[in-house]
Image 1: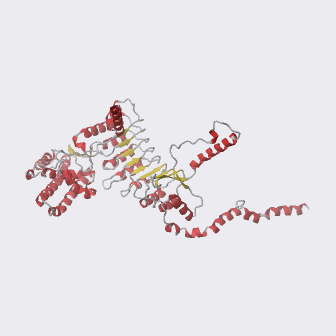
Image 2 (image 1 turned 30 degrees about the vertical axis):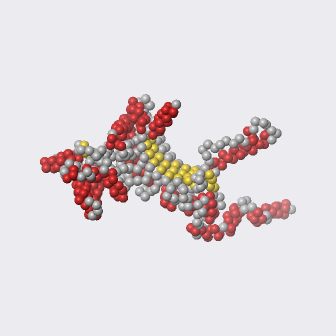
Image 3 (image 1 turned 90 degrees about the vertical axis):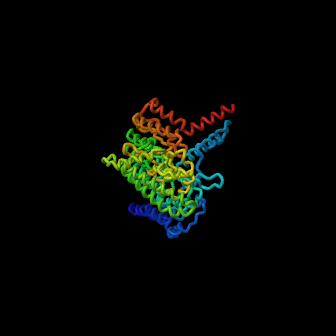
Length: 559
């Protein structure tokens, strides 16, 4: 009897199993399979249309609508919401639980308040797409994504819905689990966005291959790039330095670069300094909270004052000068047909002679150091040297032909080659070159051919060629590194040179060097004489201190 009773009891749990499968699919493995099969029966049309619908979808320009619709078409059931970014300091609204008059319902009310407060804290960490809107038309201006993994499929959705945002200016991705592959996909979608997009921030996204330099390609339109907290080491810094500039390519759009809180050492700082040698677009650079010591500091300070060109740079400079001379010869027939043909021919002859004279001078100076030259070569080198001495902005051919004195434009024509070469580079210009400004506007269309810093006026000393240094960089942050007084002295020399240059008359136009330099929290005393001198020299150059002094003067005059 006991065996007969036990048989129903064993069969009874098995009998309801099909029923349980239908009612709740999460009880058994078969139920799990049934739960997975349910969406496949409901969503086969979505799966079939997945390759077509995202392509056919036309954006509305409203990110919340476009992102939700595209996620649905791609088969996502749970996806982040698009919300307005909260204000940094939201206004405090007192709730009922903070009332001074206690009531009977005070306990449950305070409990609900605490629950709402706790829930709001967790809402902060819930995956969202935060946006900042323009106050006028409520269009999306900036996008902030933080703390959740952005996969390649999500980037594919972004490539569809970001293209319709006509006022998008910045994209900020903080700790979104980027990989080298997804970074490549992200870079590919940037050209699809609006031309107003100029700022990209990828912080807290360490990559194994450190391929951040792809964001700084020659055809990149990014002006502001932040790469903090990405564990960038010396190898990554080498790639970034090469992206800033080499002999064959140069980034001309990037204005600010933030490399703070990384692992860049002396070698990496040297690579960044090499990138600054021929870069004339970067205005703002932060290397704060890295591992830079005196060796790297010396390399960075060297670029801020006149530095010696390498042999390859000297050869490249000669080639550029020769190319410039050949281009001027090709333009001379067309220009002689218009206006005063005689004066135009004289101008072109002077330009050709000056460019070739500069090449010959470079050759003479470099050959003197390697081997002794014959008397004839030494004499020709002296002639070129004498001709190029007067005025840093004047042509080497000044004073040779006297026909120029009969016309007022003669002097201006002599100075055209150097003016064209130094246009926009902050190089020295003589007081007699005012008339050449009008002629400079004729070369604006050819700026891409003459913007190389190697074409700037150089200085010859002891058979070596020296460039005036990078005076375009305005902001340099080296806070909390490992620089001692040795590196500090190098920066003091650079700041003193730039201060003297900015005080001279030749610096009335163009960049004048650093306006803000931070060396605090390094391995030297704040009372160090060199550090104190640097602060004294930089204080009158700092725009913030200038504005403060103007405000104080205005207040004093009004009282």
